[in-house]
Length: 324
Ligand code: PMV
Image (cartoon, rainbow, N blue to C red; front, side):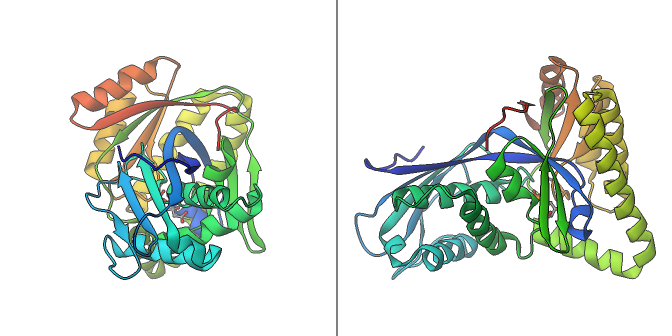
């Protein structure tokens, strides 16, 4: 872990899981997303040295700091995110360092880029003693998400900033989201099939496939939307067996959309054999994470079965009290 300097201001944001509707959400269908109990913490402090900003990270798989300014270094996308932060909050940001500590794997569909975006915005606003303005946090985090993903639906940073469970629709008049009040907490086992090839790439490859068979894909997206609507009712009524069944059907659609992989299918089979109520990939797919809905304590056994099959895994509980 990288130690932040004294007098730091902190920003935190959790990771997220998409329970229903990834990809179809890009085409105007509803998605259901939840925040999880692990995330990214950013400590913002004055930079002691040449002009920045500078970002030091742990947990994101980067060995060296990210710098903009006279001697740029580190991944271009993170440099661009720092530059966007200067554009959003002014040249004072050039005198800051961001110490990032991530407890979520990057590039696995767990919302690491959106969590980093929200945590950075929260941290910089606190350091600059700006008001706790939730709308500004959402709007500016979307600006950073655009650096990472191009044209994101906005579901990730919204659920991460708001916390809990949300139904999200990228409407024609802008994004609409509603809180989903869970009838019962969700016990989830998450398996990680490895890093995915990137959300931007997965979304554009799907767009390409969809353009060749427009009517067929429209049907598939509409089917996923129907699942998400039905799942919302089941989640609110606490009918977890029905939620699990709908997750299995959603996974079938994701397979049809071409974003599942043999490793994800293996993890889904392991989960169902171990008694999970339902299992599906989460996020962009093509690798990355999957989730299994379990009956209470069974999540631990399912996560162990994922590890026995050679994958990394964790459990998480989502409730109405989950924080953003
Ligand atoms: O970036 P990920 O892996 O969490 O997936 C984002 C979900 C998509 O629906 C595939 C893309 C989007 O912008 O909503």
